[in-house]
Length: 405
Image (tube, rainbow, N blue to C red; front, side, top):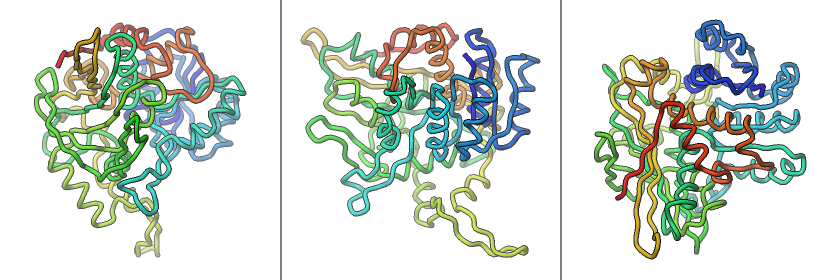
């Protein structure tokens, strides 16, 4: 397997550090818009000659395709933000490469009833191309991070091994992470965080299909394991709600994120001030007018999440809560994966949230390389057997847990 990794930010760099310990691939080209960032990711790997650095504009489909062909890469792993999903997805298909991402193509709210009906859903643009991918015998594995990704694997595992009938699958994400000296410091890409938190959340019900609700709606307190404790979680737009029902039979699917009141209030303020906008506004400067996206300005004003590891304390938990029946009796479980920032920094030099995101696509690549996972078309993690993934994740030194509720 020869991999083109596009994106050498926090998650991309963590991917290289995790992959460097595994023998399943022949080469990995680490490409970024900023050549210095790609070079730094490769330089940190103690001379592992399987890794090389390159420069590429992820929005330039032709340039990405040329890079894939030039290096003979048969897999494109997308570690950029969701704005670049479609050009990378199309470049992989054009070159015949397998495509893997950790987030899907962007949604667009319903023009008239955004908090009741879906407009363009997350991943719609990719699933619209599923037939062409299948006809060409190629695979696009979409949503293969931690959430979406591991959370979807948990849903498939629950359906296959833990339940006869599933009433509800609810992804629940929470943490007790703090950053020394900073009151507001998102632990993940703020561009993506704003996108998923301020868009209308999607809910799935079998007798109704997909529908939307208001951001931060239906708050609930969820008790997270391994000392994290109770965190208030709210509805947030996320890929799992669009993925799970395609392959797993459940009467309801939700995603709720433990953001905390202060974080929610900050995001609401950004929205009221229209600082979450992606369309450019014209800003006067000494050098003349400049067109700039307000959301990009917010991102530029905040610290890079990948740089916060040394100041971060606590744990992050990603998991899937499932309620249904087994052998005629009610059952309720929480399948989860916890990463302690102290451990991930000591072991890999990566903060907990980016490391937890990064480990899952590497596990998936190893399963694809060994033929344990295979398929054609546009598929989510739920389309593959869960047990091999969970066993290999444990082998990577990061076990998962199951709690009876």
